[in-house]
Image (cartoon, rainbow, N blue to C red; front, side):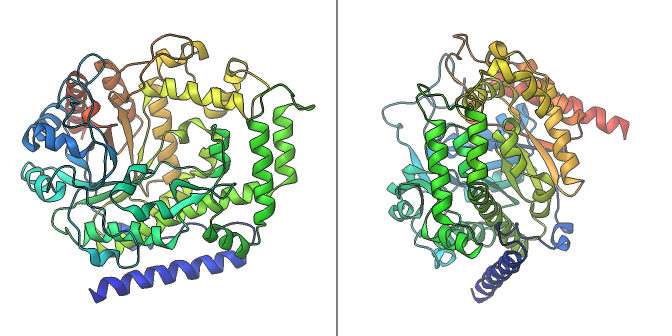
Length: 515
């Protein structure tokens, strides 16, 4: 007990000291993510030909552990399970037309949305946070680590704890104090997004890592950490109506960095008025020029965006340092959400040359089939905000040139999806950025859902077996260190999962023959 508390105190003290020193050196920006000593990463044991798959908790309960393991190993050639150890909100899927051909159908008896831990933990790891009771009870006493990991290991598979930390409005039913940790918007209202500068939330995140690595040292082989969040400016460009966070902790951090809270709030209010105007009164100089003028008038907008991003990445660096101090040999990496491949603004902040300092691996959300509809939606959001002077068709060629893509015309983008070349280019870009210091695992799209019709009235792209094959071939040809079959096992059609396994066996056989 004493040793891990001392370690935790030391890491926090070191992080705070680094932040103070960085503030003196860079008074107008937030502290950069902590650099972790390289000797910790040198001990990391990374699997060759890594093939992961994300599995939600209800899959094991509905289909049975052995059946799920049979499907993902024999059909999908998976050797590493990314098991949800924390559910931020789970609901079973319907089966039938348009839905997967395995699993238990949604019914009146299993409709509940659940949030919380899928494993048992000792509350000693959560002494410094108000979030202590968050055990998910919707599946009875099911413990995904104790019940799945031993069976996976008996098959030669690794068990990674997939710790996804997306905002969870339903978690308040399990842990009511969760509602008190939300970011504060421009109008002083709390949101469902926890603040990464809130010490209560940071202690909760650290406690989860300790409870996994110290509580289950023989069963958990690695940590995959995820959270799909963006800063206030990126969020507003993407269509969000409001900016965050202006809680007491963010305001105190801003003041320490010399950033005016009042001016930052004023700047974001002007941006909100611009981005959400009705269009009846077009700015005299147009939308983009007015957007740039607001940035010049309020440089605090960019300072606040940097403060948010550095706080987000700083929290991840702290968790990585904590994990490596406990189990230096176990891989600890991060999920990178797909917006990083769509938005030139967000891409600038998710810098691989910085990311490599605090990650053993990165899983890229390179979902090419769903990427078509998603990119189409993002281009439409640009047309409503910074590029409101034009339609997506008008700036698509320039956008592709900036992002180094060569994809379908806008009116075909949602129905065509993105090409395997998109997967290859994003893989190569990540590999170049990390310069061999971090493993790169592209996420291979197998039935990532984008339901309904697109803006043109035609159906969005759906995954076919050949799509899976070509995406896998593109990823490994680009030099990927492995892949993660994505998004969720519960969403995948058996034929597409089988295509993944057949293709992977072929790729690995060819690689072995060459060596």
